[in-house]
Image (cartoon, rainbow, N blue to C red):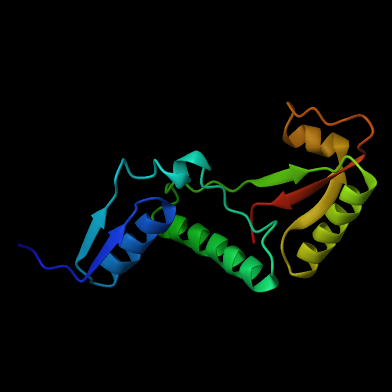
Length: 146
């Protein structure tokens, strides 16, 4: 029987990162997953990294720090660790939703998070297949970097 210092259960993005960090630090690691690595939540959510709707602010900052750590790990592993910079686009359909969206973009930008409004045309350049309603003139763009 082997002795291990730590057992990590679940080998999605978080579990695999924990295995890597523990092994790098010299721990003897037992890594377990019920299925194929990355086939659970990480596979279903495409492991999209963001901190757009993460409140309160401490939770937002935790997620933003995780984005930075993921980017740094990808560089450490040679840039081919499944990490892709991206971002997201969002628009609102009504007055109340538009006010909330504008407040969120302003709040995130004030925290140093990449959040801004871009024109409808620019959004369509980024994602040509989007069906943005004709009445929408600005789209919130959240960049992939924190």
